Length: 285
Ligand code: NAD
Image (tube, rainbow, N blue to C red):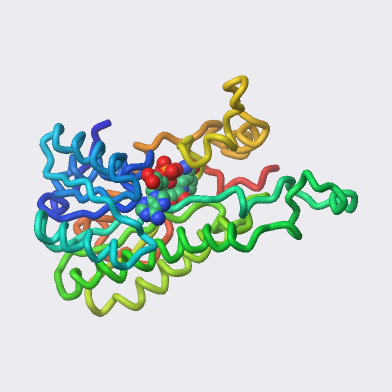
């Protein structure tokens, strides 16, 4: 979908999008490419990254797909070398790679006394530290490490910025997913910290906090495999979203381009913008 407003200063910028092979981040890559950026699509899955980059090239953009693991410094250093050689130094970094893991998730919303003897359930007492660590690493370290690698190229160059991807559950935790909620709260907090830390070298840092969008990472939680209908959790989300629906990926891109553009948001720094159909404004009553 074409964005009705495209800030002129994104044209010619080099944008790196981590997790760019995924549903939301591929849409971020499309929006940046359509605004004239040269885009590096980074993803753990080389094929997914290349497929998105090929699509961007078919739309007339300059784009490369790069296999990169946001949790491995060497992999990111190699990706940065390739981006610098083929597109130039990074101006815009979108830290999109992230997600949850079943091992950081409880079976039920509330603990009841009789749950303690039920071995079919994962309660707070059964949460696997390795699952919790996976989620914290992916979302928090997966934001910190690419920032270390790509922000170095931004220091002292005008018009550079970082956009992190937080979530609704950073404001108030969602039931069942303590690790993902805590990890995204850390991403929001880190966004503020980075904005302050980088303020004197001209790098603005902001985040988007998407509400609920149907994507690969949450499909199993939201769509019943057998019937193809919404699960009870999906229905609850929609009921708690005043606009009464899930978001569409393209509905995040106006905010992304606004935050990416110094022309449009040059004095905006250290904020986390909810894009949530009113979810965070609604008390449920
Ligand atoms: P997605 O699963 O479609 O995309 C995530 C991408 O990240 C995948 O392509 C995956 O291969 C890649 N990835 C995973 N681990 C990686 C690693 N170690 N290194 C590099 N790439 C890696 O998910 P999505 O829903 O498009 O999520 C994008 C971002 O938006 C995530 O940070 C997610 O937490 C966040 N988010 C999503 C929603 C939603 O409703 N879908 C809501 C709030 C926030």
